[in-house]
Length: 242
Length: 291
Ligand SMILES: Nc1ncnc2c1ncn2[C@@H]1O[C@H](COP(=O)(O)OP(=O)(O)OP(=O)(O)O)[C@@H](O)[C@H]1O
Ligand SMILES: [Mg+2]
Image 1 (cartoon, each protein chain N blue to C red):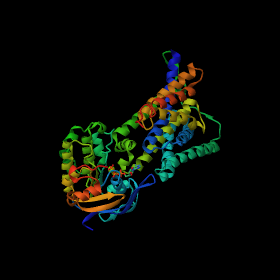
Image 2: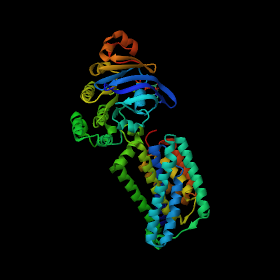
Image 3: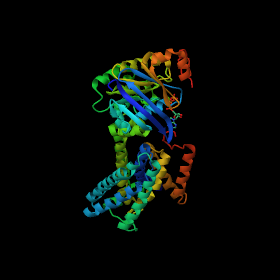
Image 4: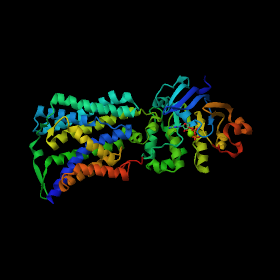
């Protein structure tokens, strides 16, 4: 089991009484970045929210050998999962430093981590007292990333961190993720296949509420036909189309 | 001129009472999406037990008055905390049931209070100075108005400082914006639910004691009648906005007083019109976040 940080077994997720993820099983290795791929609306975000307990779920979820599928969200997170949500979800009416302070978990955030985050995102240091809602999309993404990097986590769940960002900012996000992945495994939902190619070791493809493919990310993305069939794109063109 | 000053003072006093009730309603709704119909019961019980405490010491003495305020606030906080823990929390995330349980509690508590204290209002007394008046620009303003306005202003200040300067305050502000994300940071947001109930209950209980002095009596229906206007204030101010509640409390009470005096006792009617007007033009209230 030591090779896997997260084991998801027959996970079903529902929102408002409607099942949005049918039956998903996959594992996340204890090192590196694992990509979750799939067409729009296939349930990638809902899978992450199911793992976190933000959406109702059934099935087994095991984090570092311990079952977490019966725990409420805050306890799941306290066990060591950092979540970067799809739309960043920073607190618009809190300042940057309040957003970061709120994210610091007791006994998990350290001085070294704070300094590392400050070095990684100098922009945020300058804008400490600015309301997070007035930041640019890229800066908000940095707040969302900083929130998880401040803590000592077993796993990061990162949902489309490059969505809607300018190329230069995308590079910064890639750098931050690469740096983070040296010390913590990451489960990354990402539509930009170029980013996936550069970061991910493994890939999990979801379609029709189930996992339809798992394996090496580079093998998948170099197989034109397979990529086309699973994701509806040409691997070269990069973006996944609905 | 003296009439206007008197109406202003009376309106501000009433607005202060509205705020003491509406502040809690707004915080609770903002964080938990629950309209708390039991809030009037917190106020009534605070007033009844607060006055009982004053009688023990000597209702006409200052120690008696101060004791009644403290007891009112404590009783309000205590009963609100119990309400959250015993009735609201077990119905976590079931908003309709939560609201229904507060409706039930409010009805049951009025019946209970009537059983214990009777249905008739009890006329109360306080320190003599409270019933005396102070001349302002020719108007004779009852002194209790100043106390009520002052206490409400202190409560507003205290809540603002708490929200701005403490970690729990920060959690509450964040929770009002996006509760799910607060839990996704590893924070048990339910603790802050209990806390906003306690704070709102304390303000309401304290408001009950002051309302008793404003109206000159305590009765089991005291809370219910103020609660209606506090709801209107909360909606006009913008559900979940403390500043909105403060501003709307003053506006609504002044409008009510002036309409009552200059438009033949139509105050309540004008308030309902104002509510309809605000809902038409700004459905999220004066300072609510866009729905
Ligand atoms: N809060 C919600 N309320 C109602 N339906 C939802 C909710 N969240 C997700 N769904 C539905 O669940 C399905 C899966 O959505 P989800 O967001 O998980 O997909 P996704 O793969 O992340 O999509 P995208 O690539 O667009 O981010 C969709 O059909 C969506 O409409
Ligand atoms: Mg998504």
